[in-house]
Image (cartoon, one colour):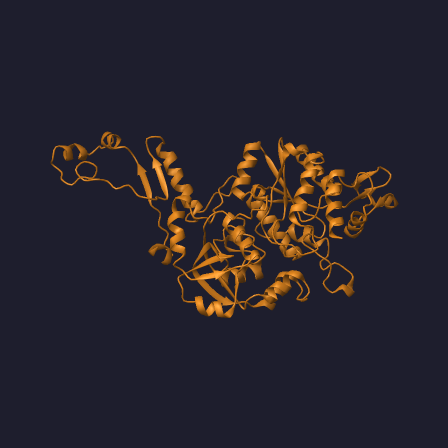
Amino acid sequence: KIHIESDLPFFEIFIDTPLNVCEQRDVKGLYKKARQGIIKGFTGVDQPYEKPDVPDLVLKTVECTIEECSMQVAKLLQQQGIIPASTTENSHIRELYVPDNRLENALPEAKKYPTLEIGEIDLQWVQVLAEGWAAPLTGFMTEDQFLKAIHFNCLEDNVNQSVPIVLPVRTEDKERLMNCPAISLQYKGKIVAVLHKPQFYAHRKEERICRQFGTSHPDHPYIKMINASGDFLVGGTLEVLGRIKWNDGLDEYRLTPNELKAKFKQMGADAVFAFQLRNPIHNGHALLMQDTRKKLLSRGYKKPVLLLHPLGGWTKEDDVPLPVRMKQHEAVLKEKVLDPASTVLAIFPSPMMYAGPTEVQWHAKARMTAGAQFYIVGRDPAGLPHPDKSKNCDLYDPTHGARVLSSAPGLPALEIIPFRVAAFDKSKGKMDFFDPSRKDDFDFISGTKMRSLARTGLLPPDGFMAPTAWQVLAEYYQNLK
């Protein structure tokens, strides 16, 4: 506790070696002298040795070599951010969860601190931070980190972080908590995390909004929530008390970056390409993913794996809900529109901000953190219609997301796969990449038209979407009536 409050990292390492082995390794003969009575009060001979109750690491020196023990220590220090982790795709990402062997003691300790009730979106950000998606962040942003994110889209060491991850608080909570060494964050009355060394600073909403969204229109759905939130932000180091679970039947899909890396390794992947989406999959999307796989194979990769990674946090109310989207994605895989054997379907826990080219950098960086080397960027990523409906246009230029991402700082291990426009080719009866030379052969089925067909029970053209996947979507929209 003293070390945590003083921001001094301390780790207890137990070198677990049997007494007889210690004696065999004793080149100075100290154990022999102790047994002869020459040395008194010798630990392990005539004075007991007390094993640590909850060490941070146990080294079994009989079972492991010196090199293996050294690597275990190095790995612990990397996970805790003491020494830099390897930049390879197999490097371990630091998570902010309290280790299981310390959890029993951490819970009573957390109850001693004053509490702050957080909302559902705040908890989604806690999960994002805890699982390491925003590495190297170790908690909600301090003011310096916030300024770097909104002005430079980066943290230290040129690590991309284009969106601020912050915790708003009300003025009365700031006054109540500002001199506390730590704050317990609770969701629906249950303590989920502890924020150590909290730093409060003004929530300059207009500055944040304009730099992040390129607009301050009050009807933008995420801007609306920012304007309604507290006038202060609080940053600090997080300790999260156990894995975040939503108990919605989808937790099995919520794989952390480390779990995804392990999954890719188990599958023998030599390339991982990611596709971020918040909408149902039609065959145009599938065509882009299929084409990317073919290109990687032609470049010499033997086992490219697709990370099909729908966003699972908050979305605006007229978007298709996550359970429906996941059911639709499962149907696409079951019909083998995408190859199930080389696809990992998982949920990205971040909330959606609809911040266009700024947000797409966050989406790409997070997938790079999970081990992806290739990222497919779509048309108008993280975009939405202009909140001023009289303008009758998109808020962002649909090409800017891809163009910004291709030159964004702090994404060194990621190759951007540009979006190719797909539409329904009437001459072939299937989705295909748009050919301007025969534009009359193509039918662009907009989201509005798709929703209209689904609501009225009409079918789209054969080849637009896998039939069972369309049925999932149609049932959802018809039930809305």
